[in-house]
Every structure is written in structure tokens, then in C-alpha cells.
Image 1 (cartoon, rainbow, N blue to C red):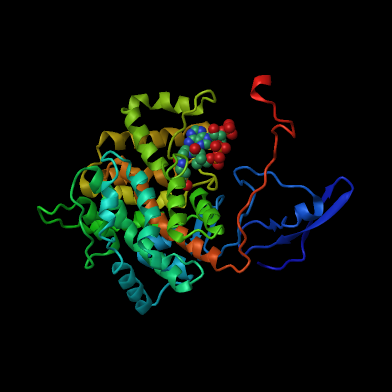
Image 2: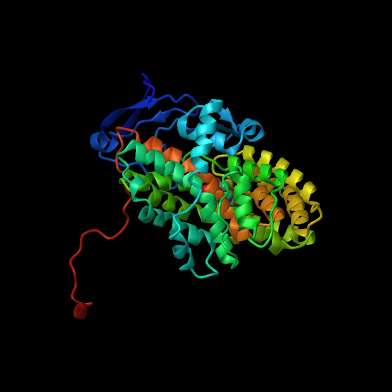
Length: 431
Ligand code: CMC
């Protein structure tokens, strides 16, 4: 943490507190309130953490006004355009871009951990066929701690490393198998001669009865989707992983907690919700009706895939994703698909509407990712599992950073209590 001479003065009644201010390498200054309760006897109140830095981190930086997303300093558009997912994983995990030898070694370590313990198949088979793949993923990833005991000791750096590689390597197999199980097809085993994205596509779409050839353009688009979702600073699921891990829970349990949080429609579930909304709208003539509903304060409906807590000008991931969507749709010859037509018209109508401009609501990454994934042949239920598998490296990088911090404390927020004060128990016959 950078040392600073700046302080903020806070007066509470007749007390005056001098609070240190930390200056980050980028982003706004941060007032250190750690001694606020001890010295001032008060808590701060910030539900939703709109003004609270919950940790110190060196991994990802977002400037929401500029629409900037940096991983270890590198802008996301350069990473999405010039790098590839496993290289970005290395960057997030270890802090620097790898040399050619380091990358080769890392890719080989990931590739050699893609298979699941064979007994895990029985675990999959215990779920109902119609289980949502996210439900299956939460269960299976949590259960990894029962299958891989030798990498659950968080005090051992080697076990932490093995758990990290295992999670990144096995997540595509878990997501693909959750899908295969839900449609009643045989599980397809990973193949070590394929790259990360091609392997995932094959495990999702191949069947044992015939050969499956991965289209390199689709594989590149898949890899870009993984890259664009790899990490996003202290979002809800990452903060969930950090909070779970602050108690010393094992990595598989922590990542399962992150997956559970990601599932919500305000977070990773938005890509599924967005496509479902586009289908519900159905035809372009119904767009004005839905725009009006999104603006109506008495209607809970929101335009899914629009708005972001941090980005207030544009989502840099959405820019790259939109370009990728155009390429994929052209390749697949589905530019005239009715859902996609609705998406394009809705985007134009919302961007031209003063309500969305005033509130700084722009299409986010989930608006376009669902469109690409649908065109690739993924059912909507698979959209959020794909987000989860991509974000796993971000969760793990943040988890590793937190665990390595010698000053780690259990996360324990306080509250603004507004319930009853002390009162005496009344026997049931007297109530
Ligand atoms: N449609 C209509 N109005 C909206 C929308 C929307 N999608 N998003 C925000 N607003 C309005 C909201 O009603 C509020 O209006 P007012 O100030 O008059 O009360 C104002 O904009 C600010 O909204 P907020 O809910 O206070 O903003 P937030 O920062 O708490 O929420 C959000 C951010 C992403 C949860 C929200 O924009 C939203 O629900 N969007 C739709 C879901 C979505 O696409 N989520 C994916 C986010 S990106 C991927 C990820 O991080 O997982």
C-alpha cells in the first residue's frame, strides 16, 4: 500500500479524527477507516459497496468513466486481439506475460489436468436430467474438495498451485459434462492435442458416433469470450470468493461460492436473461413497448444486458464482443436470425433514447456474448456456465493474492441495526 502524507479529517461530536489517505497507482484515493470504530466508536454504512474498497489488489484495474479495463496494466482490447486465453490466465495468475518457455510449460500443465476423476461421473449422474448446468456446476465444483484432498491445504503454496491449475483445467470439462448430461448425450473426454477453446467446443458438440472438426474461427471466438470474461476486479462473485476464502475455506469450496453468486441475473445470469428477453420481445415492432417498460419506475422490468455498476460510458469488453459477434454471425450466415434482428434494433432504440443516455446505460458484455453463443449453437442455459468457466482464473488469481497476504483477516462486515432492542421473553400462553 502506498504511503501518503494526506489525511481526511472527520468530526464526530466533539471528537476529531485524522484518517490516512492511500494513493493507489491508478484510481481515486482511498480513505483508510480501519481505526474508525476503535478511535471514533462509529461504523460506516455502504450497502452494495458503492464507495468501499474491500481489499488491496494488483491484478485488474477498471476506469468506469474512460471505459478502461486493464489486467496487470495491459488493456483488454490488446489482450483480446493479440493474446489468447491461457496466456491471459498466466498473466493474471503470475503478474507478467510469460516467456515462450513459460507459456509452453503452463499450457502443458493445464492440458495435463483436464480429465476428471472417473468417479465424478457418478456424481453428475445423481442430478436430475433437467437440472440447470449452473446448479450442476456449483455442486460438482464444491465436490472437488472431496475428490482432490491433496490440494486443499491452503497453507501449502504447492497445493495452492495444484488447486489453481486443476480448477482452470477441469472447469471446461465440468461445464461441458453438465451440458451433455442435461441433453442425455454421452460425456466426451478431453483431448490433449487440442487448444483450450477447441477442446471445450468438442466436449460440448462432439458425439462418439462421428468425427467432429472444430471450426478455427469459432474456436477463436470462443477463446475471445473466455478472455473477455477472465477477470473483472472486485465484482460480486469475486468478492464472494474472497469472503469465503477469508475464513480459510478450501479453494474448491470458495470457487463453488463464486459460481453460486455469478448465477444471479444482475451478474453472470444476465447473458441468459438477455437472450430470453430478446425472445420474449420476439419482433421488432414490440421494441417500443419494452423500452417503455424499462423506463417505468412501477415496472420491475429492466433491459437485460444494459447498464453497469462501474462502466458509465461504455463497456470495453462489449466493444470487442460486438466485433466478434459480427464476424461469427457472418461466418455462420445467420445475420438475419429474428432474435439477432431484435437485438440490433433494440440496441439502436435504447441508445437513441434520452432515458438511457441520462442514466449512462449502455450495452454491457452480456448483451453481445449471448448473441454469439446462441449462434454457435449453445442453449441459453449454457451461457452462464461459460461465464463461470472463463471467470475461474480471475477468482483463483484474486484468491491466491488474498491468501498470500500476511495481513489477511476474516471478512466480517458490521451492520446498521434497526430491529428491536433488549426485551424479555413472553411465555406462549401470555402472548
Ligand atoms: N434497464 C432500465 N433501467 C436501468 C437498467 C436497465 N438495465 N439498469 C439500471 N437502470 C436504472 C435504474 O432503474 C436506476 O434508475 P433510478 O436512478 O431512476 O432509480 C439507475 O438506472 C441506476 O441503476 P442501479 O440499479 O442503481 O445501478 P447499479 O449500479 O446498482 O446496477 C446493474 C448495475 C448492472 C445491476 C443494472 O444496470 C442492471 O440490473 N442491469 C441489467 C442486468 C445486467 O445486464 N447485468 C450484467 C452486468 S455486466 C456483467 C456482470 O458484471 O456480470
